[in-house]
Length: 291
Image 1 (cartoon, helix red, strand yellow):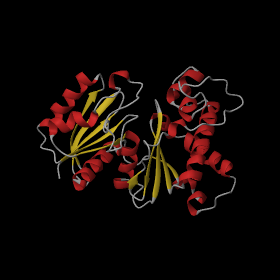
Image 2 (image 1 turned 45 degrees about the vertical axis):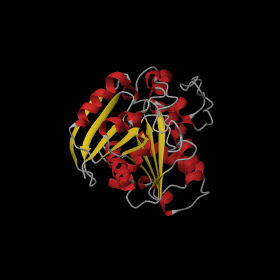
Image 3 (image 1 turned 30 degrees about the horizontal axis):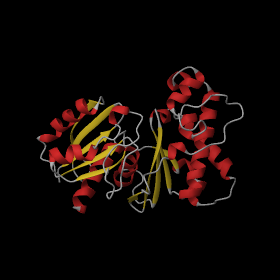
Image 4 (image 1 turned 180 degrees about the horizontal axis):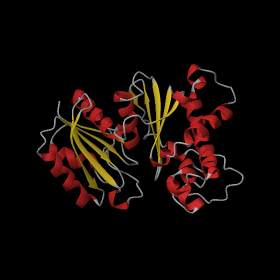
């Protein structure tokens, strides 16, 4: 199969051509501007590739209900130029091939489940911690959808008593994204994360908020593995702090082999930043099979 992959992000669009085995033959990065500028450039890249199917993993929120009149649209995104844009339609009309469509984080978890360290796991959570925070869930090989899709970055947290920062999220002051995303770190401490690497108080607070969220995911979704990606998690000192705090919060209530080995349970992404684009290949493959 010749499959197209589009990892549609807020700052860049990663386009690639590969196959069902995860081999990537070609790729191109296109900056994310407005749809009128960006979409023709992407179409032009794929137009002569003779694709069997295309997989799109897209920033959101997006409409995933095939029965909804706005299926395939980006919906209430703060990126106003993209609000209510028909992402699937833009490529279905021009490329004429089956299209798989999901969130960017669902694409990432699918990449890990199909090609990475999460192969064979029954239930996997992928959380990206960067400019925003989002989560994807794969259960028994199926991506979790409901009335929409998981918005795991907006779970509400207990604010640390010493934290006076107002919160970055315009909707919820005390949600995970509002308290722990990259911009929140910069606004609270006055510098980007890279410049704060030697400030332990920064990462103790960040780990506290991440651990609260992960504990909630563990108690509600019972995942076999939790994968943490995104730019903030390049601060690898976070991993032992988060694991320690998760164990403290669970307080021995759940006892499983996975939780006895947190070093292999809460882990960094495994596919050299290609988990999203590989997940797109799998979305394309599944769309072709479904057709």
